[in-house]
Amino acid sequence: MAVYNHVSSKSELLQGIAAVVVEQIRYPTRKGAWRKVIRGCFRALRRACLAHPGAVRLIESAEMLPSAVFQPMEITLTVLQRAGFSSVDALRAYFLLTTFTLGQVSNQTKGWGRGVDPGTAIMTGRISQKRFPALMQAGTLAGWDFDKSFEFGLSTILLGLEARATATRATR
Amino acid sequence: MAVYNHVSSKSELLQGIAAVVVEQIRYPTRKGAWRKVIRGCFRALRRACLAHPGAVRLIESAEMLPSAVFQPMEITLTVLQRAGFSSVDALRAYFLLTTFTLGQVSNQTKGWGRGVDPGTAIMTGRISQKRFPALMQAGTLAGWDFDKSFEFGLSTILLGLEARATATRATR
DNA sequence: ACCTGAACACCGTTCAAGT
DNA sequence: ACCTGAACACCGTTCAAGT
Image (cartoon, rainbow over all chains, first blue to last red; front, side):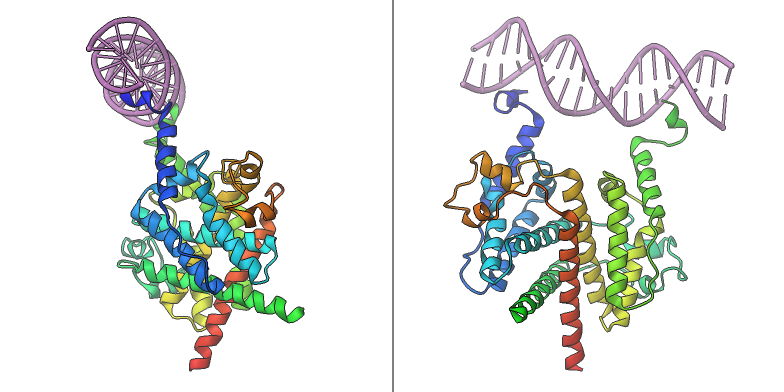
């Protein structure tokens, strides 16, 4: 009960924890090629969230967070505008990168034992060979390498952004 | 109290709702180019989730879902393997696509009045010109076009996957 | 200024009693 | 087979009383 002298509600306490996590994150310098900067930025975001399991949910449900939440947004906007993206497209790219990064983290931290793992679905016979042939062939997800999966996604997004950049450069 | 004669707990009731939503989703045919198939698949997933605000959270927290949850996974695996991706890379691409799609949906349905909108952060003076120059320039997110933002992200991912596909084709 | 114990409201769940 | 009302456990919060 003593905590009520320091915070006014449970949700405020949780928000405070989210704020501490958000402020602790250190993003690498933004010098260098935009691909490298973005890589470093979202790797840092991911590492920080993985170091604090449950933080993602707290951050997502927080009503108000310190201005440090905007740091990855600022970094992404800066380097992408420098690379020739419009500010709207740069924002869209930012949302693509964050939703991906945070989504991957919560996939990993929650674990998908919960009926979303095709491996266990196959073993328990919930999935038919007929309707899900590709899944049957892919097999289990036990021992899934989340790091590699994240790097694959991040690289794919960067490749896509690069394709966009060269496309707009060509129309100039 | 009468519902306890039909379900054994509140969470089972919620899970049942999630199951209904998941089973209702109709994915377009998987004939055609893999880019088109994937586009159609995740557009359908997004539309269904947007039609049921709050469904995403229910689906994410469900312990067990009908096998229909695996449909987008099956579709993606099928067309990407046909396009020359390994089954591991195809799975990674699937996770990239779902985390992005569901993340965008929850961004949209929750709304980001909650201190994650740079526009209100600027107006309330929580953000300094000095530390966030790119953000100040980008301005408000009021009237943000979520449809366009989603299409941007989806196209970017597909461009990235295409770049990967042609790269591996070249090394053959 | 900070802590404590008892009380309150709220909500998920159980159970005995109804039809 | 289905519904109902009262009771219980649990948890976030308040408040008067302590130091």
